[in-house]
Length: 256
Image (cartoon, rainbow, N blue to C red):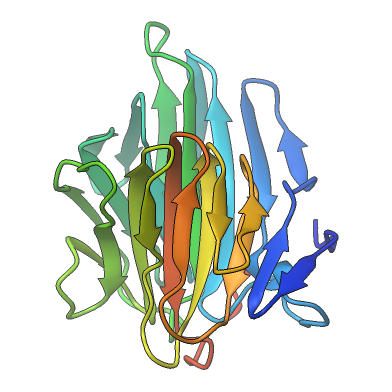
C-alpha cells in the first residue's frame, strides 16, 4: 500500500493528488491517504504521529465482524449518516455528525462496525494516530461535539490534557470546517508544528500562491505564519496540526 504519489510543491505547501492506494471488500471499501508521501524524499508514509487518514465506505447492511486493534488511536469522523459500533466492553454506540468516537486501542481493543439495511450509504474518515508509547491502557471515547458553524474551524480532538472534546495520546490536533465557496479562512497552525489538510468535499486554494487542492486531495503545509485557504466551491475540510518531532511508536495493527 505504500506507494508514492506525484507531488507538487511551492513555498512550503506540498500538495498530493487523490490516493490510488485502496482496498475493495465489496460492501466495505477503503482508500488510504498517507500524509508523509506529500513531502518529497520523506522516508515514512506517515508524518510524525499521524499515520494515515482512511476514506471508508460502507453500504447499507454491512457488518465488519469483531476484530482487534493494538497500539493505535483510531478516530471515526462521520459527516453524514451513521456508523454503529459494539465492543467486548459492552458498548453499543452510534457515531454520526453530532458525535465523534476515539478508540484508544492501547494493549488491545476488540470491536465490530455495522450499518443497518435502512441506513444510508456511509462515507467517513477513519484516522490513525501513532501513540507515544506501546501497550497503553485500552479504552473508548464517544462524545457529542459542538454543532459545526459555517466558515469556522471546529476543534475535534487533541493531545491528552488539552481542551478538545476528545483526546489522543500524542501531539496531534484535528479540526474540521465547512467553508462556503468564495470564503477564506486561515489554516490551523501552531509554532513549530506542521499542518496536513484533507479536502473531503469541494476544492480550495491554499497559500498566497493559491496552490490548488481538489476533492479528496491533500496538502502538507510546512510554511511558517498564517496560511489562507479559500474555497473555490462549497467545501468540507479536515486539518491536522502535527508536531513532526513527537516521539512515536510504529506497531499499530493498521496505522503503522
